[in-house]
Length: 46
Image (cartoon, rainbow, N blue to C red; front, top):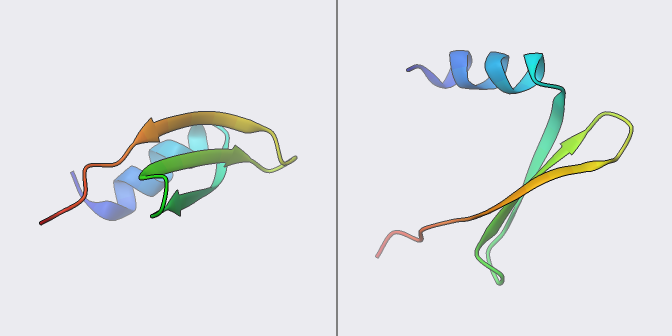
């Protein structure tokens, strides 16, 4: 999978942006109308 395809798939699903919270080790997906769609845990590289 390319990064471009990943972004396209997210956009198709209604994701407008994502925010990585390094302190909380989470990634948040937001819609264009500022609704929080999904939060996932991020595995931090060592």
